Image (cartoon, rainbow, N blue to C red):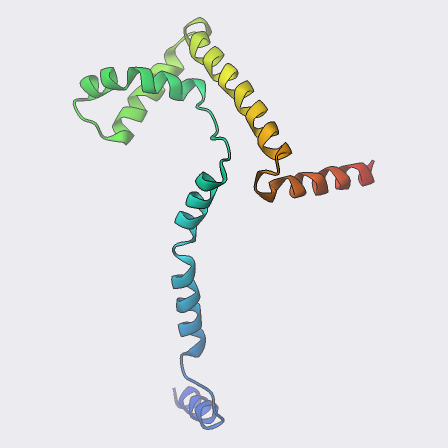
Length: 139
């Protein structure tokens, strides 16, 4: 449109740079593209304990080969769909050994996290203290 062209010409004449914001946005996006990997590496380097697997994932790990044979392939979506159906069909008694292992692993994880936080674990404990203070003020 003529109006747009006129305003753009005035903007450029006044010293504006065409496409500057778009370029800045793209540059910022490019700079942040590696942050997910960097965060993951930083978390691994910090020594923070890894979250334990749930009962379902323990079941899946133990029975993955059987599901791969049943499915005839190793595609994760196919395997997880089969294992999910099988897990839902299981009775609580059948799930119990896996859930007991998961509960034990979770308790160990919580102890490890407490220890990690008490030893100054990566500065995350400051956030927890702030949250506790906020909760005390509201009461």
